[in-house]
Image 1 (cartoon, one colour):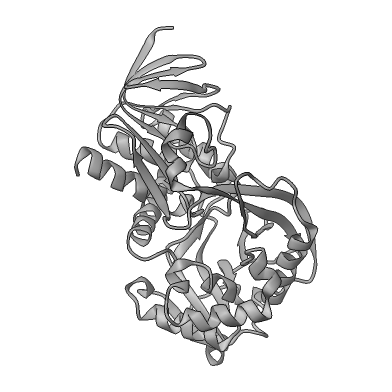
Image 2 (cartoon, rainbow, N blue to C red):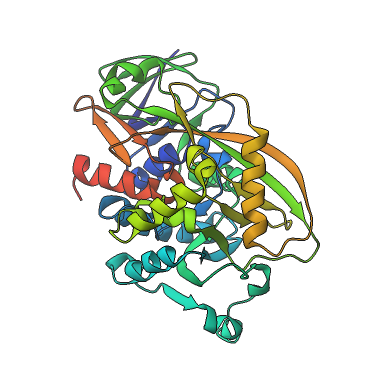
Length: 383
């Protein structure tokens, strides 16, 4: 096997790896991606495809989300990636949630977001918001709206992005190629040998193998999610992505506000089973009208293999509470899994002057990976 030479070799074809390839090509580097599977199979295609800015942790994560959303929009137009719907609606059912929403609007992250109290509901369609009737507003005291969010179909968008990187930007992909060892700048794989000026390993939830010795000190866990695709009545159209009080109590951009303490306390009392399973509702819609619904969060040293019927029913119960749904059929079930850290939203492990490991450790890869890659290269290569 002849050596293949690149400025940058990336191990892993998930969104973090693809983002690093995109950012490297913008800097004029020759780039290859090595992937052990025939295609991306991990968290990057199992998620909501929900590109979120509002609610992200302050500072680096929020800034990375802003940048990543901009890149996604640019790529959507050139890589034939369809944006399915835009905007996010958070239904506030408790007075404590209303206080969190109002406090959020006073922060820099609340720019361009809006809170709509009950009295304004009849005027929302006149303000240009369509399909508001798809929300069940019976129990809500107000709506927090963010215009920054949008949704792509992950299982389609990730292959489309890989194809664009290969066909238009000149990234070489080596599928079904497992990296066996790395010696300095030499990478030995099952199919080829590579030499690279720089190496970035993007393992996603695969925390074993060649990366294990370098990341053990970070005490990463695996978070397993339960996800559903649901068919509902004909003609049902969401006004955007939908979340609830539980999201305000979970996402750091909201939950770290002082006003969130009371909300988290009340949810803990009123919804202990939801807190136990880490359930906070997200609902997005696909082009065929089906809804992608989730999710729960279970943490451990390995993926939780078996899905729980009781968790599924809790998710569906909350969905009915906030959406005007008259019927549903579950047409797909799956689990997602991502690496999770109790201290960091993402990490860049600097193994050597040649090699780094990049991991999003908060389940926000779709929303922040381009920003993480930019920050990595800005520091490594210079802006």
